[in-house]
Length: 488
Image 1 (spheres, rainbow, N blue to C red):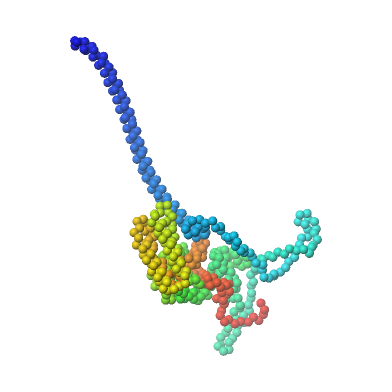
Image 2: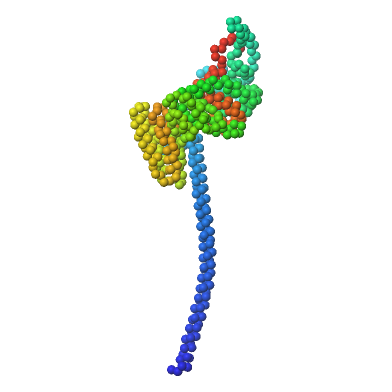
């Protein structure tokens, strides 16, 4: 075959190949353009993905912060609810179907009929209340007893007090009318009402003034009422000192403190109490010098029941730490959403130990048995303190336990020592309520008056004595002799 013939034969194949090359080239260009477009889209998506990852990281941080705040608020809510309401939940945390109030079969309570009838009144209708027809009286009656209080009026008495001379001692003497206090223009009953309203009902001075005006027709200023309270404080000072001596000589004492305000400045109310006495003092400091001064000279073998505040730790007496504070902290930590298994187990162990200590002190006091129980419980406490906890929540509770150490077990070695400081918290509660109502005291003198008068009235209440009669006894002159020339 000649070259020309071969060329003619190859020309169609060459044309076909050129067409294929052109087709492939065009396809390659299209794919290249598409790849560039996809690459640009990928870069855009990657940028958006990085932005979203950053936002997710921020949201996770915010979520953790909000979760922690929510847990703290929930724990505080549960704490407040537990202080106000007794929930239907047992110690294991499981609910109970026990309804509130008296249970089925409980003997009912009702108001008894009065022992005396002061007056009898017969009541009848003259006309029918429906059609106004005149009615005749009958012998059939229904009895209905009504108890009410009279609306009192102020009684103003003018006493003519003789000026008399004692021929033996050469002194001029005079009587003090019954129901009055030397130097006071107001009678005993009015003073009792003011004391009750102020210190038992926590009524502000403005409301006391309003009450006296509307209910008795008695007018007095707020300053006048405060002046009465200051003068009563001077009369109560000897009893205030007796309360302090009684607390010092009593073996088991309780202590607590809470904030107060004097002239808008921070101050503190300190409470030192026994089962039968309460001593308040309002100070400008929360330092350890206050309990040192108040408890100085306490009887040997005294035990101080208190919370974990460091000001009490150096007092020269055995101390029992409040279990409630420790268990509350461990319980709140174990209920957090992010609580570790370690804190859950630690809370369960502390609860079990609290129950065991409670069972020990509930039994009659036998020295040998108590010492043996103390050694066993101390070993368990030491084991808890030595645990290598890895999580912060368990470590925090462990530190609280370690700081108190055997102070959690002091009650085992002493008779009639409680495991909680509930008594002190109950006795300081009236001062907390007063602070919430009035905001505190307007002067240091007012703070001192409040502490003295409140101590006297609260101690009378703790002793279970009749309040009015005991106050009258404290305010009345001892061995006072007088005679009324005319019947009152």
